[in-house]
Amino acid sequence: MSTQPPEAAASARELTYAEAIREGLEQAMEADSRVFLFGEDVGVYGGAFGVSGDLVHRFGAERVIDTPISELGMAGAAVGAAITGMRPVLEIQFSDFITLAMEQIVNQAAKIRFMFGGKATVPMVVRLPGGSGTGAAAQHSQSLEAWFAHVPGLKVVQPSTPHDAKGMLLAAIDDPNPVLIFEHKLLYKTKGPVPEEAYRVPIGKAAVRRAGEDVTIVASSIMAIKAAAAAERLAAEGVSAEVIDLRSIRPIDLETIAASVRKTHRLLIVYEGVKTMGVGAEIAAMIAESDAFDYLDAPILRLGGADAPLPYNPVLEKAAVPQEDDIVAAALRLARGEA
Picture (tube, one colour):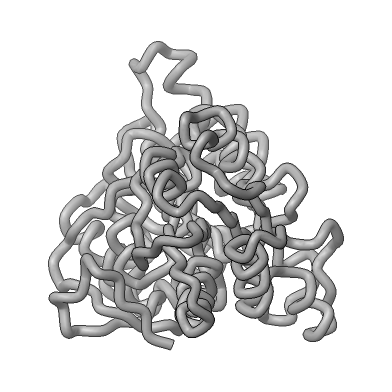
């Protein structure tokens, strides 16, 4: 699969999503000695998903650190290092395991800057491989980003392309606040144009991946890729879909979403996380509370994950999260007034 965001179209060089992250890490570590990477198997093994690669050989074991199996301890070390002026990048091997580090992330990292009146900051990044599609079952396949988007003091991003994976990582490392980056496991091998220089993709700004007139489809991470593919099929059905890639779910770019809704008059929100209490519910509420609500010609539709633990069986796993066919069907219902 090749992904080509408009902002990277000028670059002919292509990298995989994983390679783009690794290049971003390398450039950040070369530019700033305070930046270091740590986590389980990020060193000699090169990362559970091969993202860190040979960075340990380039920067040494003091800056690419293999840790014990203790997510709570790792998160606490990241908070402490960040407070003292370092720029830690913590990789949690599977995003599900961040549940073991909730106290440090939610009660410490998110609150310290506020509680100390800005005199202390926590410039830490947590990288989180997540999502379904690898047959890793219920404890290794979740999409938990909505949990953390609920917490003031945290920023939460979900890049969908190699270009954004590198640019948002570098922006996150620069940020004085804790930033959680959810990286979908199925995206690591996807390819797309990535500039060689160290660039930043702003946190909190969505991208319009495809302009359209009949329905707005809002998604992020791998769902943005599926939404773009669905839009191609919708065009053949005579439906012009505008696809908005959220990229950032805290903060959410309401302005871009609302502007699209005013144009298309219909809104479909697609996300892999469980539908109930999910990101789609928040976006729907934000639109309902804005002036864009008056432009709607149909109810807002949410297409989210099933209210069930993710199955191991590949057929059931696929049925538990939105697929391209589901997006096409939902958008057609909206456009045809059948929703």
